[in-house]
Image (cartoon, rainbow, N blue to C red; front, side):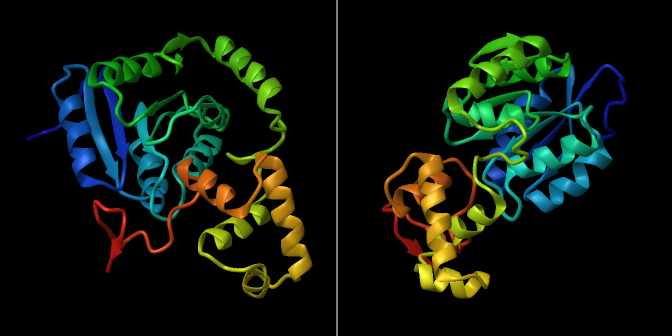
Length: 243
């Protein structure tokens, strides 16, 4: 079947590592007369190659991807192709996370349980240059004001170029914590002193306003900043993992 060539069509790309989810979204969009799915990717590296080449009007981007995090992918592509638009989808939804997504270049942010009708309406709105935040359609100027208001509440420095308040080295340390390494183990793996690791852990907890390493690990995982180690293992319904 030949693809449609109508220049008025909204060209959509889907980036998600679950084939069943991609299929469901594709089927929802395919029946819309003004929307065409032009590309699909299952991980961050593939998205970095395919999205700029396909030049979709709107990309639906999952946060928690194998390899490069979906927010990092969005930020990197937006820096090189600011004309491309992104709707971020995630299993976890709160205002601060929406703030981070919008700040690095997304035009909308939804939990994955978004109703099909709402997702379709958002795709159309974003294609027209609007933002959709907290179910409200905003102009770019309104979105900028929303970001400023969030900045005043959340206190993330505007010159911070990442999707989290942590520095790259603090993210490195946090990833090792999630893998279960001790401070000594982290120091050995990263080639830094044990005291330096302690300093980074203290900074991480202070920035996230948390009291212990476990809370910091859960905080990062729930927001999709990092993935569970060995996530390719099968996860049973009881929460246990099997090879």
